[in-house]
Length: 77
Ligand SMILES: [Zn+2]
Image (cartoon, rainbow, N blue to C red):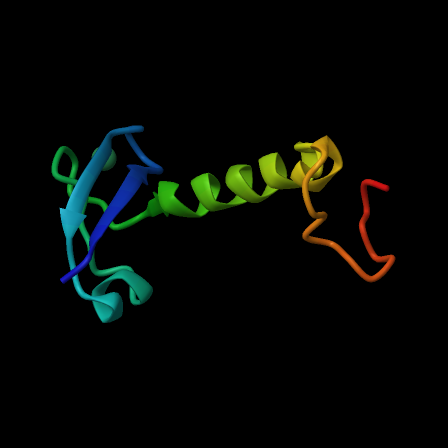
C-alpha cells in the first residue's frame, strides 16, 4: 500500500498514512485527531509546485551543452 500525506480540512492536522487507492479516492481515510474524512491531499500540492519550478528554471542546454529542446522548439532560446 502506498503512503499518502493528508491535511485535515477540519482541524488542520497533517499526517501520513497508508491506505489503498480506493480508500483515498472514496474519502474513507479518517483524521487521526478528529476523525473527519474531509481531507486534502498534500501530495497534489507538492506535484504542482514541482512542475511550476521546472517551468521557471532556465534551460540546462543553454549553458553550453546540448539543448534538450532541440528542433527549434526550445522555450528558452
Ligand atoms: Zn482533523
